[in-house]
Amino acid sequence: MHRRRGGIQSGCTVGLAADITGPDKSDASRRAAAGQLNGGAADTFVHEIGHTQGRRHIECPGGNSQGNDGTYPHANGVIGVWGFGIQDIRLRHPSTHSDYMSYCGSTWVSDWQWNATYQRIRTLSGWDLEGAPAPGDDHRAEGGLLLGAIDDGQEVWWTAPGTIADDAPRSATHTVDFEFADGTTPVAAQVSVRPHGTTLNIVAPLPADFDRRQLQGFTLRAPEGDSAVEPTAVRWLHRPDYFKAAE
Image 1 (spheres, rainbow, N blue to C red):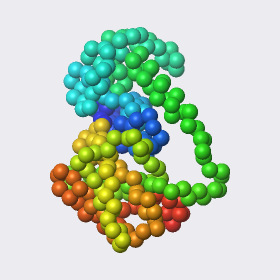
Image 2 (cartoon, rainbow, N blue to C red):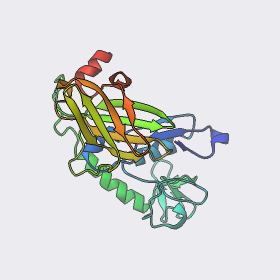
Image 3 (cartoon, rainbow, N blue to C red):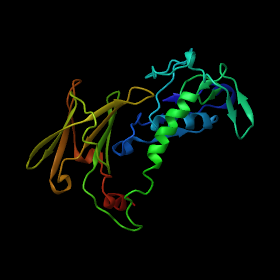
Image 4 (cartoon, one colour):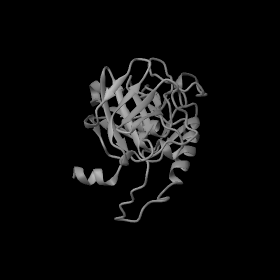
């Protein structure tokens, strides 16, 4: 969870990004963020969107952020160059403003962050409407993802449309065993820790013919121990008809 400074004077805004995502379409299911807007919303919004665009934290004095990007070129997390606001017509000093992916106050965008973000936005924007179904077309494509969020003994599971790229890295220690009436199908999962906190993200592609087989449950195999999950504990959202059923 991300908490902006200055909360006593101006209220406090908290935000949470699902993950720090890569430049592939298969990361779409994790390219999301949420926040509670009680004041100072703009800075937190930009910071969380930064995570969905693949940006990691920037270390700054007293920031105490986790998962910092060690390639950031400016010491102490400052922006390193003059910044200019086109809305308020103000300059931002290179050494008194910190990059917006840091936890320090008086944030702005550094030249390094600007260039990295521009490249990611260019990639994501290039997919606009690519392969989108026609309006009203209930396209029932094969494929789907099982997603889980685990923290402090609590688990939340759901499915979503999407795939994982064939060359995407998978965990060598975390497997989801899908248990069907006709046999068990083990699937290696993607595993990551959310940028603000200790929540463990689990992402696994649904096996082929998933919706045509009788699922009895699944088990997450992990070094910390196995966890069995009943089908009734999952929100099934990977097919258009599931959304309709929920209306």
